[in-house]
Structures are given as structure tokens and as C-alpha cells.
Image (cartoon, rainbow, N blue to C red; front, side, top):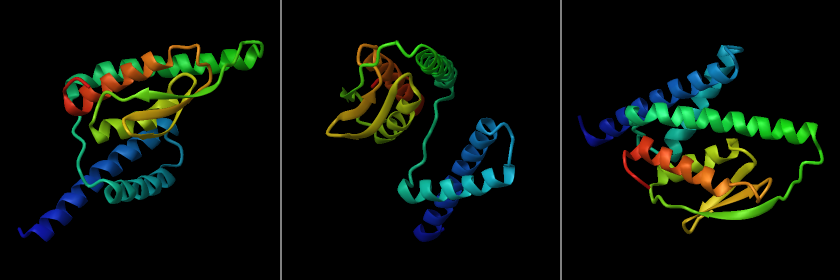
Length: 164
């Protein structure tokens, strides 16, 4: 197979993998509602993913259970914190823009860390540059850096098999 056909074949394989992943994510998050719409979005998201980054992401299955448990616990804690703040408006807010020094140099880990940080309790990443993740925190008194550090460690083990 010549390199042009091999490159096209690799892009098609990568796109198919992304499409399946996005569609499964849609089914989970939408509780099975509107599967045709979810499939359409999955195809579009897969196309964008292939256009942005043509390298494949390899997941270390041995690191997946620990990542899932960590992430689900943090999602629950984040939801609980937001609910608590909504019910008790006197809970203090101390918002700020902060910088988190990234330990990893892996671009895939950095990209996913930036995307997933917004699902953690009281955090929203805006971008990363020059080795720092720029994050808006709802309460700078919380241990936001420790939680992001743990997420970075889990993602590094999950995507690269190593330490940050």
C-alpha cells in the first residue's frame, strides 16, 4: 500500500474509533435519547478530531478502572458542592484566575486535562501555554491544585503508561 492510501486508511480507522467513542459517550450522557442526533454529532466530532489531531490515542486498560473511580468521585463531589452553594447562598465564594504548573509534556494529556478540568469541583480551564494550565476557580481556598494534579497523574498513566 502506498503512503497516500496508508495515510487515508489510518485516518479512516482513527475517525471510526473516535466516532464510536463519541457515540457511546452520547448514549451515556443522553440516557439513550435521540440516538440519530447523537450519531450525527459523533460523526461530526470524529471528523473534527481527525482534522485536529491525526495521531491515535492509546489507552492503558490497566489504568482505566482507577481513572473511572477517581473521576466519578470528583464529579459527584463537584455536583454536591454546586448544590450546596445553590441551597446555602451564604457559603463563601472566593473566585480567582490561577495557574497550574503542568508536570507532563505529553500534548494528549495536556489537551484532555484542559477539557476535563471543567468537570471537577469549582474549576474551569481556559487554556494552557508555556507549561501552565490557566484555570478559573470558584473558591481559591479549596484544594483545586491537588485535584488537578491527581487528574493529571491519572491521565498520564492512562494515556502514556508513565508518571507525569
